[in-house]
Image 1 (cartoon, rainbow, N blue to C red):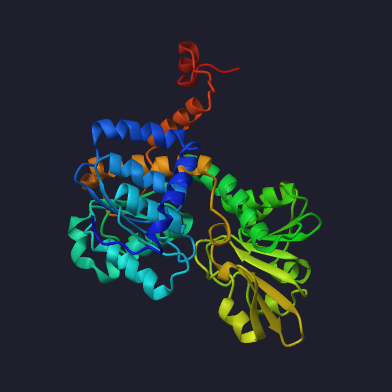
Image 2: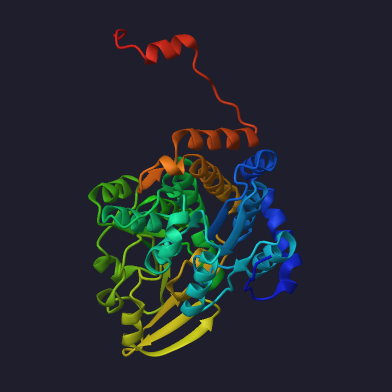
Length: 419
């Protein structure tokens, strides 16, 4: 086994128990793993994966390993690693892992470099840090790369920008854009796990609080839905008029952040953009305001501006930093502005990651078969993969659906029949 860098190998037994618990809620991935074990579609393929090191990711790594792949895993966020899971992957499955919860930026990028030392044929990314580092610093490895997959919105945005600039040197499948990913993972997974992280960090009652959701994409929709379900008064901020209109029609208050900042109790950013909550917003927030982020990078809240404004900073609870401003107001930042659902909680429930990681596994298989014929750009998940995952999920849930009759198929394909 290759070198690894984790917190403590002695945590392995607890990690294995949690990995096996998560597997119970991942029947689609389990069915794919059973086929992969028979067919070995990734035999001899080296995969460098930069993903959140969680119980669900561990089951994806096991699936790729059963397919015959040689896998190395590193973290896609310094605060998202579950150290017992990392230990279990190393100890029980002999998968090299380079990830320690709370690692600094130097260590984080050293771990990415270690994953690239694996000389991958496939990359598997969540946020595109692995791919961007590969293109900027390890270009000698590019000729060996068949293609890659990308898990999240932020990474897809970065990769499309690279492709537009002619800088992307291999094809990448945007797993995030699969219907069975963003409809479920982003909406139901992010919605529930973000609320879970905020409550674990603060133990605040959401009912009656003004909860500000910045961004009404699929993650924002899910978060707003869950916050309202907990009794919060939900306010949405947006820059897209169509999404803003949808939020209004869904029954939420919609206003600019400059107005929401004055009245909000809890703020959560899910936009994928920079400085969504900025200095001018801190200046008008009420005493005790709570700030969290569930976008991929810790740039959505302007933390340097908050640091500059504060006269005092202290950790008042695990994952809760209190910034005292010159006028005595206190603003609380959760999880260092990083993904709160992974910093303070356990990330998405396994049942939604089941579909996300099924997309990853089948997209990796597709890339090995077809990558050499693809252009160097970002591709959607093939529709047949999306539908197969939905079909497997329904079967695992014991749900049957109708099929079209021959008459119905003829009717839908004809232009002659009408009123």
